[in-house]
Length: 154
Image (cartoon, rainbow, N blue to C red; front, side):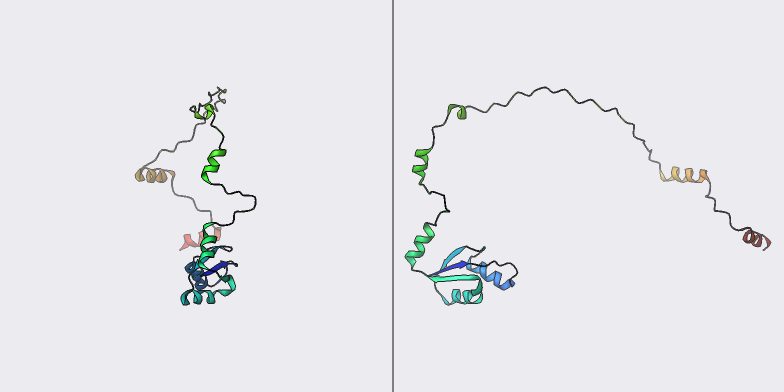
């Protein structure tokens, strides 16, 4: 049986190396997996050896390590019976339904004066054309006098 630990990240690695990590069941550095020793597994390990730490273990060692992982420092592992024995007796307050606090009346903020919004009436296309025609054509700026005289003579 092989104990395989990922020691380096898969960031900035070739895609087929990332796929090999996933095939081995590894997702992040520090993760440990156990696989039966076979040529297929050995080939995968050989491909990405630089990201892994591999050691041979017996089936009993692997089973013991998988079942009881080492807890983090400062963490104590207790059975459910021990945890319930240490559980403090529930207080009657906790069993009563929660009451919502009564809302306090706050003075309403002063209302802002209403501002009239300019309203534009929507006109039909015909009405808009009529209003444009009523304004008359736009006047073009006067051109030089010499040019206008030349046009009049022709």
